[in-house]
Image 1: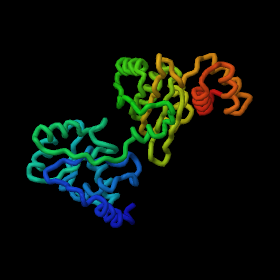
Image 2: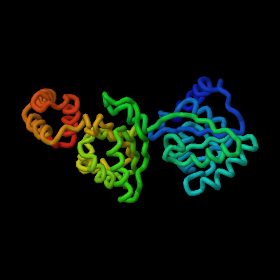
Image 3: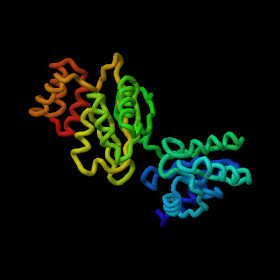
Image 4: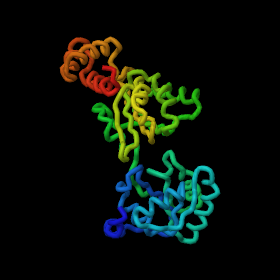
Length: 305
């Protein structure tokens, strides 16, 4: 990207310079979640004009800024020093500086450091301004393909690292009819997958390494997630975002045909093309065709049919 950096920064100035950028303000700047090309023009404009960039990891942010031809004084502000470093930011804001805050990826303050910083700025009577951009959450939601979803969801972020507490959170999720979005790190994904088995046939959309070279999106039953991970050594690598699909009214999932219907579907899939198998299974069992179609796709992906 560096070869085109001058024209990129010029484009950012032309597109975003007309907006007012007050001094003595904190700018919460969203950064790409993996693909440098996903930076927003207004984010570039803000990063090019601020006096200081506070950040979760100075080495990571220095490399990020260098990719856009930018060099700025950096201030480390992460989960272990956020309260103390926030005071340094406040001093600079009171001097009239513009300060940007960025996390390692995505929107700061959303399952990332930054919330306590904003609270401190607000308590001091100063301004915090959002500069939106890439988000793994909305990126995944755009490809879930759930035709009956009304757009409402619960964002749970990272579940507890403690097994018993995490299992309790999964049970609560099972009792909630709404869609639920989760984040997870590679070293914990297998433990989460084992706990999600409790959700049975409820549909799950898995996003792995979104926007990166080896990104992957899969639609499958929650009970099949562990098997999906084990089907390829690479599948436990990278960052994960997951959507547990919403339940239908009454607690039954419109994506989860009963066990008998699934057995019938498996027999038909073994002999017939997918669409034909789904149509006949719907006629035989009385299950909704859309639910059977999603189940058939999931079972083909996991190798169960």
